[in-house]
Length: 411
Image (cartoon, rainbow, N blue to C red; front, side, top):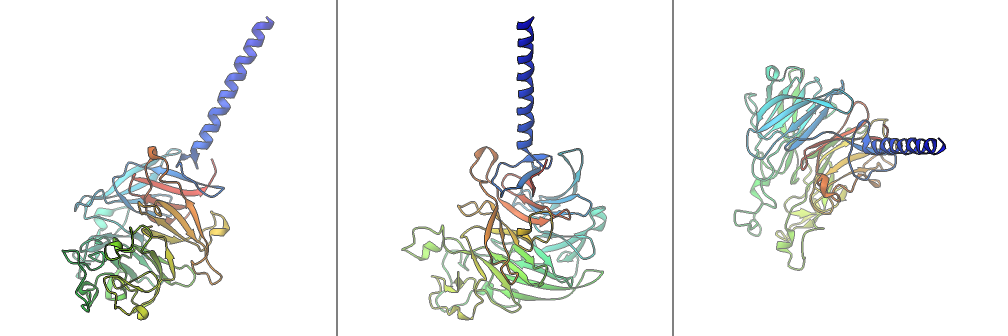
């Protein structure tokens, strides 16, 4: 009997230990009830995988009722894009409902002053009500709106946008080329301007559309700022109302700089404070107003210098100012940016903390890192970044098709 009791006691101890180990493993593997993304985050934060299986997700918009709208471009082929509604379901699960399909390379999505969703397509911006999208789909720019379409040309044809406090709309118009090269790869002849960067239909600009409300009708528009290669990352400061832009620097600069082995660290991407009428240098200048090697005689002194240099080829494609109270107070009014790039400086999420004047020029803090170090889960490539009404940060990343939430580390 004594032996039997001893064996029974040991058996229960082993089972209890196994149960504790299992419980611990579950706690480690979950973040807010969802699968934990195996990345590095600051102490007290974690990244949750809310949904996956998307083909090429590029945009996300959290709604006030806890639902998420996800834009899946699916591929670079025309008219393949879809928009999905993610509805909270059972614990650790979102129900996925398709809202729209057959869209031409949809990308940016924002919530308008009228409570409707505004979606960027190639050459167009449309708006719709997520409760009844097909019936409420209306062209705002391009299409049947009566407003001339966006250029949608060349290398940077995707559309992103942001509303300001007055309800006017800033829209990126990316450059068609890398550094204004022709089909043979050569820049314009010495002394010749870059044709695509000039005139009222210039590329490499941010347009500002003045809208009449509540119809969301375009009254007029202007090229608000120029010399910006690709303005996919836009954000309006919550206090000052200033427009900030993160620019994607050019590629292959080493081709015109024989002493440079590669372009891994040159040129830098840029963070720009956007001012009306300012020119930020593309394609003539790079970094802090340095003349590009293809335009060695260009006087860059009249160009607006970057407010901050970002890592080279980090490829910022989405950003938002954090105004919530859910994350630590350290991040209040910081600029949270997704670095999409596949090279050394990309595949991460960072917060640029505010300086003494509230500008995002303080310390850079990595919020999600190590996204490239675990081959079994794929390299993360964040695109759109938004703050939810709950104070968490939501993002989509297009390399592995995931929707991710950054939050306080809690069961």
